[in-house]
Image 1: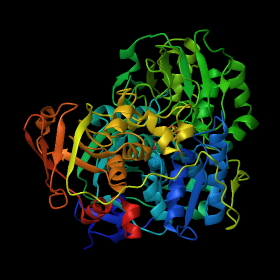
Image 2: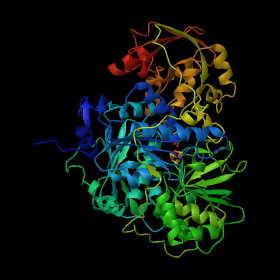
Image 3: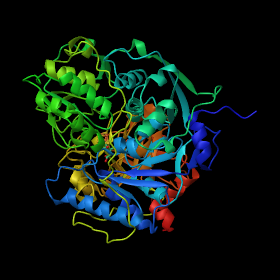
Image 4: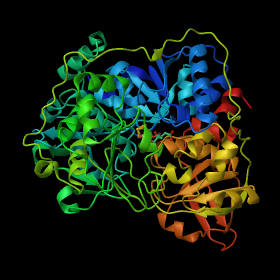
Length: 640
Ligand code: MIC
Ligand code: SF4
C-alpha cells in the first residue's frame, strides 16, 4: 500500500529533484514552477540573474512586482522600477507596474495555482498557500537561480497539522486565527516546519481568509503554510476567470503529521499582537480601552476585497474619531477598482479615511509613520520596534474589524461590542471579480536594460580563508530581526540598489556606531541569541555585513531565510554547541576560528581575550559547505 501523504509531501514529491522526502531535516532540492520578486529585493535579484548569463527565465511563470518602494522622493526608486521593468521584458518575466498592487495579493488573484511551487524574494510569499500552492520566501539569489532553472534547496520540513473546527463568531476574523497560532507557538515555533491546515473549519474560510493565515505563518518562522485546494478554491479561481487552474488537493486520510494543534474557531475572540512582537498576543479585552492615535488598514495580510468591504461597512455613515489618523491601502488594483465601482470607497472617504495607493506603504515605513510614542493599530503582520519609522511608536497588529471599530471609537475597541453596526457585515465573494490586467506587461524578450546611477554592483566575497582572527564587533540578544540588521523605511529603502550607501545604516537600530566601527576594523564577527535574523527575506541583511567585512555570525539559533542568505554570500553562520557559551563572549573580545576548512561541521571558537574555547556547530549540507568554501553561491556556480 502507498504511504499516506500530507499536502506538503504530495507537492514536494511531485517537484523533488534532489534528496529524500522521508528524511526530515535533510536537504532537498525542488523544481520551482513560479517565482515572484518585488522592487525592494528585485534589483539585487535581477543583477544576480544577469550575472548568471541565462538568456531567458526557465520557469512556468515569473512575475516582477513594483509595490514596496513607491514613494519617489528622488530618482532612485523610479530608476529601479525602470531597471526591473526592462530586465523583465528582456528575460521573459511578467511585469506588474506600480499601482497594480502588493505582490502577494496580486499573485493570489491572478497567478497562483494549487499544487505548484512558488518562491519569492519576499518572506510573505507563503500567502500563496491559501490557494494550496507550496509557496516559500527566499533570498534574491535563490530566486535568480530558480529563474535560471536551478533547484531551490530547503531542509525537508516537519509538517504540523493545525486542525480547525467550528466557525468564527461574528466580528472575529481570520487574523484572529493566526494571532492565536502565534500566541500558542511564538515567533520561532514554525522554524523548519510547514503548517498544514485541515478540519471542518477550513471549509468555512474563503481563499483570501486562508491567505491571511498563510501570510502570517511567516511570523512563526515557518517554511510555509498550506491549505487544501477544495470547492472554495475552485470558486475563487472561477471568479478570477481561471477555473482551469484548479486542481483538488488534500492530505490523505491517514497522513502522518509531526505535530497536531487543535483550534476551535467558535471559541476565538478579537485579539491583537502587542508591541513589539507578532507573538505578544492578548485579547482586546485584556488590553483595555487604550487611546488610539493612528489606524492603518492594508498590507499583504489584510487588504483583500472582503477585508476592505468589511471596513467600509463599519465606517459607513460615521466619522473617524478626532484623535485618530486613519489610512487605508487596498491590496490591489482589482480590489481598488471594485471598491470604487460599488461605492464602498465613497463610504471610506466620507468617513475621513486617507486613501493610499495599492502598495505596501506604511507596512514598510514608506510614509504614515506614527507620532512620537503614538499608539498605532495596524492590520499588518509585523510590529517590530521602529519598523513604522517612529522608534517609540506602540504598534499593535489587529484584524480589519478591530481596526475599523477602533478608528471610529478613538480607543481600542472590541468590534463585537463597539463598532456601532448591530450585525457583522456579511460579505460574500463575488461571482466574478473585475478582471483588468492592463497593468501587467507581458514580456517581449527584447529591449535595452535601463540602469540608473543609483544601481551599484553587489559586493563579492572571496574563497574562504583557513583561519579567521577578528573581534566580536557586535553582540546582540534574542529575536534580532532583519529590520534591526538592515532597516527599511522611506529614507533607507531607496538605497537598496546601492550596498555601499545602505551599509551606513547596518545595525544602527542596535548600535549607531556599528558601521563606522566595522569599517575601521575591516573585519569582524557578530554574536547573537536565538532566532537571529527573523523577519524579512532581504538579502541586504547579509550583503551589507559582507560589505562591512563580517566573516561569521555565531549565535544560539537562526531564522531560516537569513541563514541561507548568509551562506549564499559566503558568511559563516555557526551556532553555539552549548547555548550557555553565549555568555563567554563579550563585545570587543578578540576571537579566532582556526582550521575552518577542515572543521566546518564543528569548529572551535577561541576567545583570545579570555582564553575560553567554545565549541560551535556548522551542520551544513555538502552543497552549503561548497558554497562557503567558494565564498558564496555565485562564485561556486562560476567556478571561482
Ligand atoms: C517586509 O515585510 O519586511 C518586506 C519589506 O516585505 C521584506 C522584503 C524586503 O525587505 O524587501 C520581506 O518580508 O521579505
Ligand atoms: Fe509589503 Fe508589508 Fe507585505 Fe512586506 S509585509 S510584502 S512590506 S505589505
